Image 1 (tube, rainbow, N blue to C red):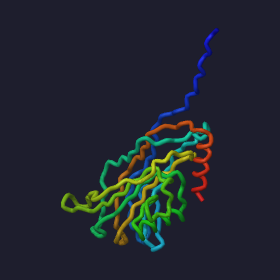
Image 2 (cartoon, rainbow, N blue to C red; image 1 turned 180 degrees about the vertical axis):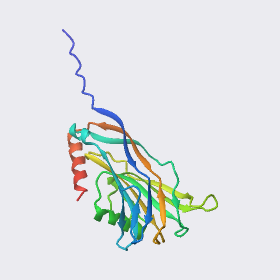
Image 3 (cartoon, one colour; image 1 turned 180 degrees about the horizontal axis):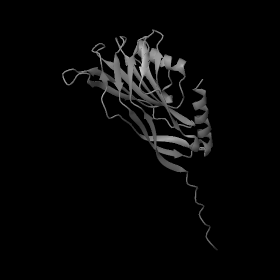
Image 4 (cartoon, one colour; image 1 turned 60 degrees about the vertical axis):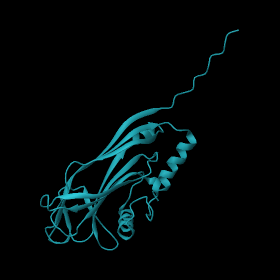
Length: 228
């Protein structure tokens, strides 16, 4: 009697990749009208409820090709490359803060104002305690405090403290959204004041994988519900 052939299980689809998003350098300058001008037009101003300006930038990582195959993106490594120095033309404020993060969901202007309000009122970055942003939304993030140091060179600045945040949750969204926001703690209001922000590259290493149908549907549903 012939032995039965063993039935091989189907291997799940796995597509390793490194996702990238490029944020250009910019010099933001207070102009004669009291507004802020940029050398890179993709940057913009976010004004908090308290009336304070923040510098903002948004980029996109397209996952549409994976969505067409019903695949989920799983992050396994992360990095933000930023060669270059921040340059401040003013001594006051004694520091600036910067956050960079990658989100499952987009943030329109109202939601960006919520982020800077959380940051301004409670020192809360997206997804952390006292923040109005869901922790699972934020795949990766970095916060830094930067202060000028005139003993090294005029306009130079040093990182005083830095920390990471984010959930590294898998994503079934059709795109990821990358953000960079700069906060000033005092001045940056006189005509001619400027700050140079170096460019950066967001990197996510990982793979697009095939999940079981129920898990995939629930993950995709959560991605869309969290946009409301």
